[in-house]
Amino acid sequence: MKRTGAQMIWECLVREGVDTVFGYPGGTILPTYDAMLDYPVRHVLVRHEQGAAHAADGYARASGRVGVAIATSGPGATNLVTGIATAMLDSIPLVIITGQVPSSVLGTDAFQEADITGITIPITKHNALVTRVEEIVPTILEAFAIARSGRPGPVHVDICKDAQQATAELVWPPPREVGTTSPARGPRRSDLKKAADLIAAAERPLVLAGHGIIEAGASRVLQELAERTRTPVALTLLGLGGFPRSHPLCLGMMGMHGEAYVNHAVQEADLLLAVGMRFDDRVTGKLANYARGSKKIHVELDASEIGKNVPVDLGICGDAREVLEALLEIVPDQGAEAHAAWLATIEARRAETRSRDILHRPNGQHLFAAHVIHDLWRTTDGGAVVVSDVGQHQMFEAQYYPHEKPRTLLTSGGLGTMGFALPAAIGAKLARPEAEVWVVAGDGGFQMTQCELATLMQERLDVKIAVIDNGFLGMVRQWQEFFYDRRYAATPLLSPDFGKLAAAYGIPSQRVETRADVGPAVERARATKGPVLVHFVVEAEEAVYPMVPAGADLDAMIRRPHAGEPEVAA
Ligand SMILES: Cc1ncc(C[n+]2csc(CCOP(=O)(O)OP(=O)(O)O)c2C)c(N)n1
Image 1 (spheres, rainbow, N blue to C red):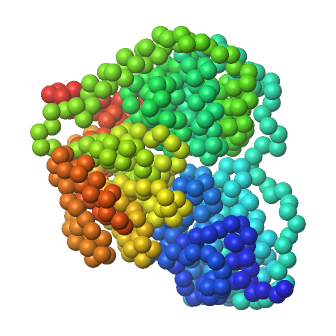
Image 2 (cartoon, rainbow, N blue to C red):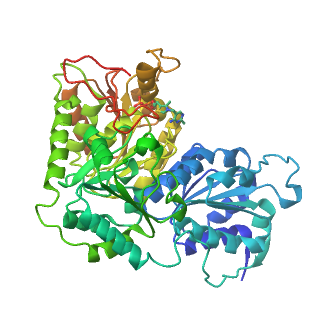
Image 3 (tube, protein in one colour):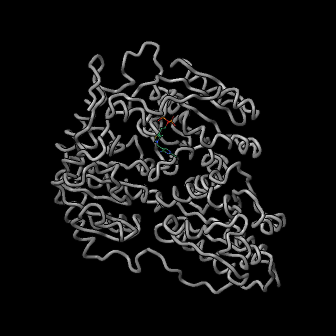
């Protein structure tokens, strides 16, 4: 049967199981929007295309499915760029569809023409410009296959308006293998044996678990392996939730704002088993002195990551779950007393870290961001999906909201994109309507995409919002405090009255200034149906500790001073 190119786009999306898309219309994508009305797909109209990309991203992170965003050519397409790059760095599967000017005027600087496939080459896993109707179906199906195969990522398809309008016979191509980054064969037996021997011989082993654990669904097997070998587990920011934080072998987050005892453990380990993580500079600190005394095993789906930043003794290219399952079969059970001295050393350091904890400070009337996050965790019983923005509050979230399950912390790790949280939470709530979804955003990042409050209301989504307002671009102010002699260039921040702003969209709000009010405010927000904004006014000049200065060794941390001690700036 004949179809227009526009209809074919929707036929493909329905065939791929897409139930929700995020987008914004315009001239060159109008044929596709018109055809949309005849298909059973929910379209969410965002207020800025950046929001569409982030919402599709949040949908994908929360569900493990492919997120879809649609926009028009020119400014519509360029507005997607930040969201596409965000997904690329964090390996999130997206299919982005944009309209393009008619093929007859391509390259003439036609109205709203931008060479968007040229622009997205370095920030997509794959992209394509479609000029003929016959190319639409194979290109979109391939886009889905590539987005979700191997190491996931965003794929962009740019479709000329005349191709959307033309008609042709709808032909489904035969299923075929698409090029993927996944290895053709599983890991070699000899490599698995070598890994098992290294693990068995280690006295101070440590697992470094990243986002790949969550993507591969490897949490359960990681837990079994850790328990069988009595190996503690440190997590990257994007790995949080991949191993239950309450587990006795869970150390929490490593890296620039990881806990001090975790970074010391990394530096002192004699074996690192790194799984589904890429030795990002925020995780390693200075490479030259990174974990020098350890043998390193790197399990990674993307072969090009192995040995890229950190030389390893053994690289195993494969799916994290498959590799860990295979390892579990051959590693010996180390017994209940294994690594006792190593675990005791870490525990002693953990206790020392606790003694510096900001939560234990006699704080008088001060409200710290850490209080807000801690009480949010307690009041939601640790069960919320938290979508955090970028800045100090993001690191406090990582430190003080112990995540037990995968896909319960959604945050922009690799690109560190302010403005991510609110639109991504919209996507997350649509992907998992039963989940309690909280946005945790700073006063700066929230203002970058606050227009999506309108989307929230138009879609009637029950998303709660915590704005953590310190009157500064806090994380940048912290760098200025430590490294630029407290010269606060362009970081003091004027904000609107967030309560009135919410009211303008019909969203109820609360303002909280004391610690005693945090829990009750969160309770009231939870008891209210629909969106609620809670405006937390916190200490203006608090810092996130510890901090590894950029380019310093991982254990050269600036520590939080004990109560009563002066702050020690670098
Ligand atoms: C789009 C974007 N622009 C700039 C930055 C640099 N940056 C990182 S954190 C930060 C400050 C964030 O301030 P706020 O949102 O108020 O959160 P806080 O750090 O105070 O918790 C800035 C400007 C960024 N990460 N993303």
